[in-house]
Image (cartoon, rainbow, N blue to C red; front, side):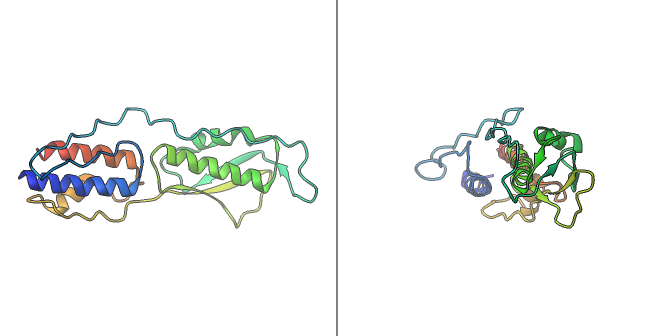
Length: 194
């Protein structure tokens, strides 16, 4: 593979990864002409995901404001989750259980579940409060929507076929999209194209 093709592929995939998730690990483009200097490959991601935003515990209210409906939250149920088990997501709900909760508290719990997914690299996944439910026995159901990567567009790839690159970056289109896995696959693709 020519140096120009490698540089073009690197720049395209770098831009794609940056658009998907602006954050740590952005590599500045090589200065000068293509082929003059070779850009440095990024380091592999750490085995453990970095700590994301740490949320404070929800405020404890002895009594809800007058006119606001509350009930004791005895449990949570989750539908649509494949990446994390009900037990893992249930740990997020633990601080809310056994307490009088309002709609604002249920929304806070929804936000925390979504934040958990995002912090683990599932940037287009999250939770919704199930709207057509009757809260029986104090159990609230949350719908989990795990996003997928629909399409990978490839250009400037030189002699590598676009299908090959797509399969390397997104081998299982039915798998929930994880930005950290995409970065790792991208780094492996760059090393193999040397």
